Image 1 (cartoon, helix red, strand yellow):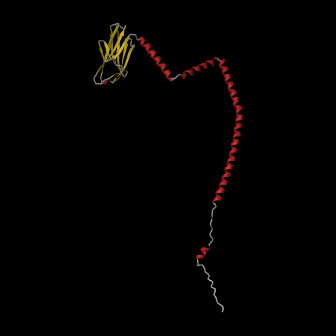
Image 2 (cartoon, helix red, strand yellow):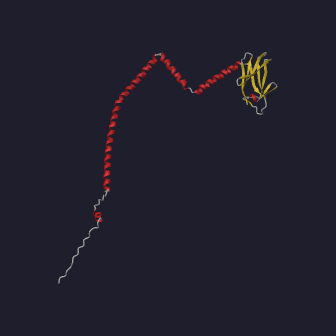
Image 3 (cartoon, rainbow, N blue to C red):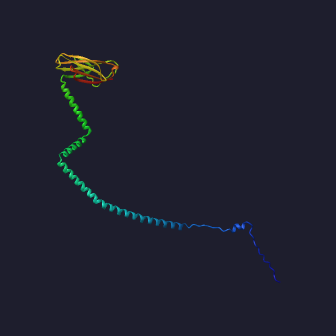
Length: 249
């Protein structure tokens, strides 16, 4: 008795909407990094070699051009040097033959020498000239022996000397004496002028009664007289014999 066996075939159908999503094709992109880096390095090497060859060619061409210019300029420079030498020789010959040119040359040398003198030396020379003139003027004034500005006179002689300033420290009036000693002026007159800021305040007339005579005048100073003062000695011909400058403070 034969066995009866049933063959069962089961077919699974996809559910609606799901099978379509599973069966859609997908594209996957993969990058080969090694090949990309190799290609990039080859490209950089090619560009570097091209730049090197081009740069060498331009430098060689520039060197050739510069050498050519120098070769052309060298004879021109030599010609200019020859012309300058010939010009110097001709000017020297003119100077030697022309007396006016010689004098001008000497004047130029003197002006250069004076220009080379420092300004300080010029000022010193001028100051020395002024001192010499002042000494000559003082020699002319042989009548004046002494002139002293002092605070007091004792036995016809000055006690001390005021050099620069009269100090009114105690705010009390102070007498200031202008002592002068003269000779060979007997029976003549002299004048003492007291000036404040260049303006004459008082003028005293003094009579000389001997061949060698000591005389003086005085001025009282207070706070109202503060400032710059000058006292002068004149003879009868208004010739200045002496001058003293001081400050009252």
